[in-house]
Image 1 (cartoon, helix red, strand yellow):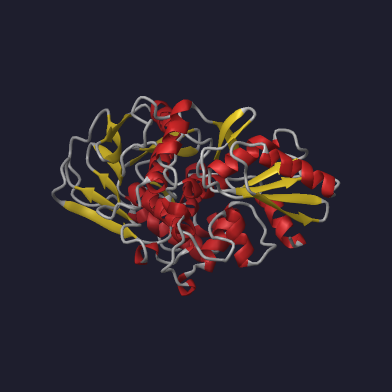
Image 2 (cartoon, one colour):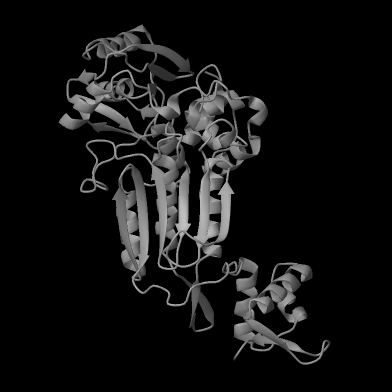
Length: 444
């Protein structure tokens, strides 16, 4: 392995297919976890905090590692590579799952190896030989549709400096095979238009008048990569839900109608766990006067049910989940539902519920539904620049463009645009003549 690729992997850290080990201790557990999952690599001579300590690489060490692999039941296929004083052990995905070591059965989940329970083992035996959707090679994909900017943005979100070639980066992220062929997870994250290859890999957002799917006030189909689908869906929700305000001292605090973090988690769950093999439906975000519903096709995978949600983690698309985990879109695996419930309790005005009837539907219901129907889409919330301008106007009471510009690190044109937008939204007004007048908060 080249030095640059190792440096990239050190930045990237442990993940679904990468494990750092300082010594041989418990290495059989990691081998079994990889063999029971999609395979992976163990970097021997690196600590958990990504520090290269190195290890003496000789035939004796390799023989010890090979003996450990052979003593698993059934034996695990491995092969070796090295990068300076780091031994790289590539563990192949097993053809005869489940694999067991001296301390039991293990399965790779994100960056951790978790001990399997009886139901997990039973499920693996029943589904043996089935590859997950996201690990399958996207054979029809053309690299003419590869989005290099999406990859750069992903690496930036993951705080990874690019120190390897594209092929190595995608392989180490788990988004391609060792021949450079993109898998379905890579396609979802780094294609210019995933829908071109996966017909229902997009999100439809709709705002309805009233409480039924009758009159559509606003609609958008989001067909970009899976990260953009999440971000643009949230923007659509912000545009089509109310935002209240509370003045504390001189600060103007926004109070959204729905808990933003809970909605974000639900949308991520929808695109992450949907059944992409089901071609009959796409992810849907529906906004009504009294609720928001976020739905994705796919029944719960046994032994998951409504009672065990948030307590155990079974992922339909483990590579997709791992790619989200690396950029901190998700935290500890299997805790998404618990975080949604926590955010709803904190918000206090929304009741959260789920339905599982072939679809997984997250429902956010207002405790006090809007009494008057909305006749048109609600305007976009104020931007960061508008917030800064609004705070200064609140603090200084009467202020002109020159005074605002002198206190803000933005151009005069940016200040003017912010003022114009705030006036259109009815939040401020201009008093006096064109040359000597000033801005103030409306109704102040």
